[in-house]
Length: 355
Ligand code: ATP
Ligand code: MG
Ligand code: FE
Image 1 (cartoon, protein in one colour):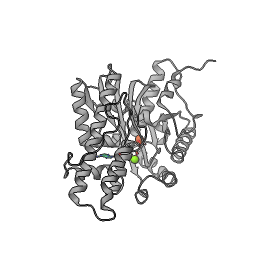
Image 2 (cartoon, rainbow, N blue to C red):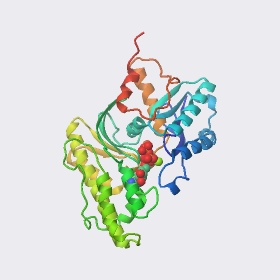
Image 3 (tube, rainbow, N blue to C red):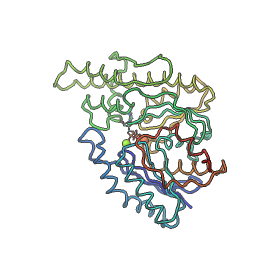
Image 4 (cartoon, rainbow, N blue to C red):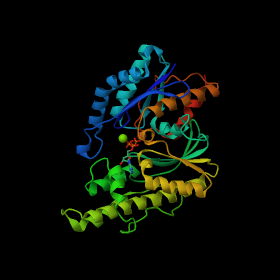
C-alpha cells in the first residue's frame, strides 16, 4: 500500500502520500507563520503549531488522495536531525498511527531525505543515479555530501559557522527586508551592481570544501555602520545585496570545484535546500558542472524546501535497499527522535544485527 509521511523538523508542517513506486498521490505543506515577528524560528512556537496543525493536515491529505487510513501500507516521519519539540510531535503522531493501523513505521533522517529527493521518479530527465555530489544549502544546513547509495553518504565539507540560508536571512534583516530574507534579498539584488561593493570571500581557495559566512556578515555590518539609524539609500542597499549574493555564489562555486576534485566519480551535481532557489547561485553551479562535463540539477523549489514528499520517498528507498540486501522490512518503532543524526550513521541501519 501507499506510504504516508510526516515532516515536522523545523517550521514546515507537512504530510504526503506516495504510491509504492514513488508517485505522489497527495501532499500538503503549511509554512508556519508566527515566527516572522521574532526574526527566526522559535522552537517552542513551532512545536505547538505542529501539534495543532498535524491532525487536520493528515486528514486532509488522506482526503486529497481519496484514501482511508486502513489502505496505507507504511507510515514514516522525519525523526531527526532538527528541533526536538517538532520531532517529538511528528514522530509521536506517526508512530501512533502506525500502531493503531498495525502498519510498520519507518524513521527517516531529514538530511537523507533532502539528499535522495533528486531520485524521485521523473524529476531529473536522465535520472539521478549514484554516485552524485549533493550541495545542501538551507536555513539550517550547508554541506557537500558524496551520495554513493542509499545509506552510503560521505560528508566532504560543511559550514564552520552559519548556514548559507542563515547568512541570507541575517543580511536581509540588516537591510531591513524582513524574514525569511533570501527571496527578498534576491529581488532587491536585481536592481544592484554586484561589483559595486568589495566584500571578502571567506575560505575561497582554501583546501577542502568547508564553508564560512560569518566574516561576510561582519563585513556587511561594517558597510552599514556609517548610516547608523538613518534609512539606507535604496541604490546602496541594492548594491550591497547584489555584492553579497555574488560573494556567496563565488565562494560556493569554489567550494564545489574542490568537492568535485574530492569526488571524481560523481556523475551529477545536485543542489537542494531553500537557497538552491537562488537564480544567481543556480547559474554559477550550472557553469561549474558544465566545466566538469557533469549534469546539474536542482529539484523544483517546493521539493527543495522542507516537505513530506521527500520523507515518504526516503522511506521507500530505505525499504527497497533493505529488501535488496536481504534484510527484514524496516520497523523503526523503537527509534526515538534525534536532534542530531549524522548522515554517516545511516549505514548502520543496513548492518544486520548479530543474533
Ligand atoms: P532545514 O535547514 O532544516 O532544511 P529550513 O526551513 O531552515 O530547513 P529551507 O526551508 O530549505 O530551510 O530553506 C529556507 C532558507 O532558504 C531560508 O534561509 C531562506 O532565506 C533561503 N532562501 C529561500 N529562497 C531563497 C533565495 N531565492 N535566495 C537565497 N536564499 C533563499
Ligand atoms: Mg523552512
Ligand atoms: Fe530541511
